[in-house]
Image (cartoon, rainbow, N blue to C red; front, side):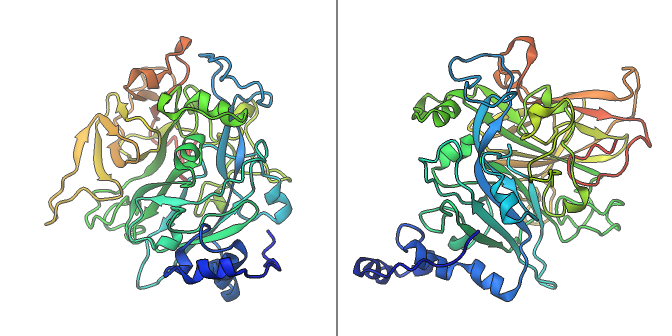
Length: 455
């Protein structure tokens, strides 16, 4: 993206605005003119020092596919939707490694939910900050909207206001511009992120996803053989063999239709017409992941792209091109499986695993342990996850039975709130429902990335 400053001169009004603010650097778009704000953004300093970005994300709009039933005329399916798709969204895309031409080609090709990313916990003995550049590509269907975008890391401790993403106290990214977020993640665990501009609208339209911090303890096999941990537990109690993210969100069809058709929804009428798990609804939650580039999935799930930078998908699943992540859980007997739940819908979800006990080891990126080290983790079959909450739970895969004749044992993982487990659709379509499948020993390879089936 172009970074040249404009030739605008400073007016007396601009000067008074700047001089009247004691917090010049954190004042944001409402106080500092855009051509001056570009002169002081930290990304210029980062580039001058030659420091690399860890991730490049872009904000834009796009379309996804939800079941045609229940039909909600005229809101769902949307008659403006491209073939095979049904619902207009706002969202983010991972554009790391793309040149400007390919990056700009991703306008109107947002992913839902936004690409999951993760970072390593900040280690004072080998200090490394995490840098993410956000580009605002604009909205293809709504060029009349000049909405800025931000990335707000929900629950992140001790973030300085400049990088918080809350637009009244930090910087928001106008259309066609870039901004670099710099994070020093000191607390491990599972979080979420979202755009904080027009946050009710942008969150619900899909500018949301899950982010987690890997602990410094990772790699130490003396506590647990895999060397993988959810937290710095010091005893292996949060060690696991496989991990799966479970991001909970919702779609109110009328709101999405209204944004596509230049209308204003009445948010006090909100209803969750569709409840999504990793951006999909059942039975699409069981469909495979889109092709993932494991080598590039260092900090985020990197979906393979074509020559133009567009997301690739699996034959027969073209309708899921912009919903690339499966929710199916695969494991083998005796393995510990970490489920990272995060909810950025507006409704509480009661995620229930039938036949297997889950141990809750963390909540809101906090290890469940008392002040003096007393464990406060607990076992349950149901995770009641309210809006804005995250849970880290671990279960041990039971012995393989084989009585199903399917080649795996099947356990249901679903939202026990009935209207959000199947969206009240005929045939049981839709909803926050997936499966845990336990395969015979030796059937699965080690995970190459989160949500990898290993098949």
